[in-house]
Length: 631
Image 1 (tube, rainbow, N blue to C red):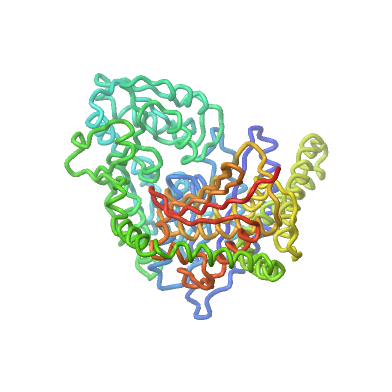
Image 2 (image 1 turned 45 degrees about the vertical axis):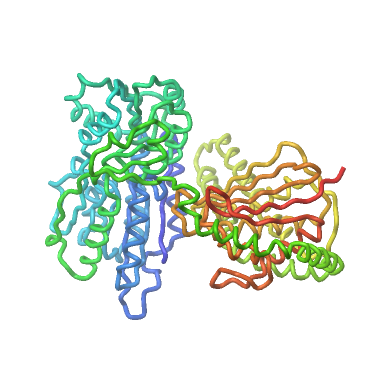
């Protein structure tokens, strides 16, 4: 599936913003090419969908709606789809820049070849397409989704529009807060300072006026986010926080919603409530919330029906209200909220079951295996020692096999490597074209050009570092023992897979020991061990919920050994497979060859080390690698 994205960046001073916007416009036009250059299906059935984001493709909560809608379209569309994504972004700034360059860009991109349908995500995008309909898409049907009913300009709607509207019932949300926390005296309102957020501040104040005698509302919209964090860290016990939206704070700093919420939760001394389902599971207690799934389902239904020939005027939907209350069991436990205080129709999720409830079969099976194999331990240890000696004697053959495996691992990193190279190269191109435009002016800003050149130098160094890391992994060399610092070797392996983890929405954490870990070994092969195990761990968590996808790597010293631990939050290793995971040609992956972990163990043992795989009590697999420390 192909798509295009245009991001307009506005600086704090108007003149620089105008020059930068013009440079980005020219670069986008050159790189994107004409809209009709998309290769159509041979049957002529390709449908082009223009998706316009209000705040950004990865800006919550709207990004969750967009992701759900695209997944639904991919599943249900009987036609091949070309979803072309663009971002308005102006709603994320206190002082948005002019929209004319963006309008001209869209006009030039779709001139003579309009999309089959326009899909706007959020109220700012809906207003934009309504405002410029006549110039850009006069005859194209539009679906305006995730639009709060109070922000919808119904007078501007036509028979060519379908609206999927939602309603924020703030009274229901705050009545829920006072029910589950009846001793609440103060509510800290965490809402940003953009024009859209100021609109919602006025609406919330108006709607919650009947509660003014019951609780005190403290508004943080006039504070920078760093000051909000300081206030949140010292709240009294009768206070709660309400998370509305934080796209830009009073200091004009733009914040990604999920990252800002995590920072707030990390320091908050009071529970956090919100009505936005996209943030549920990331630190909010819960309550009645927006229904992301229902909104996405109706949107996909409308788009599919219109592309199938149905008239937009015949498609009508009721405004979507909040769903039944849902609560995060972890937050209820953290703040001592009793489940008996929840409404009768509530759903409690993320409940942590006991170890016996989750693993009782595995525990019984492991115990049985241990009893059966107890008499064979002596023989297995002797066989293992013989195998280690034989493998050390065949180090050169090991080097050849490891080199082939590194090529296979790098194949899985192709997308990551391309992404890491495209980013700095794209930045270099954009900065170069911007500098050329500035130099063509009557009085170019030399200081600004100097900054651009510094950016180009930095991006060039980034690209060189990617190539250096790749060459070090692919280098074919004989087994070579050196004195190396293990923390640096592990860090280089993590750098290679960091972008892959980001693309898979997996959190990759590295916790190195502060002191040096000096070991003897081949640095390329030791790096390959870490690389293989991390890739396996990311595969293991791929089916988990996004919030639970985590791979952690840590180093430490245990006696006279350096230890590397690689843990994941997946479903763990089946008890019956624990003894086989390091055997050649044993695999649980449909397309796997079963050599990755076998090569890992061979390399580790060739370095007089050990590797152990086990399941963690809290879930997920844990690989522990140890090498002898020198000195």
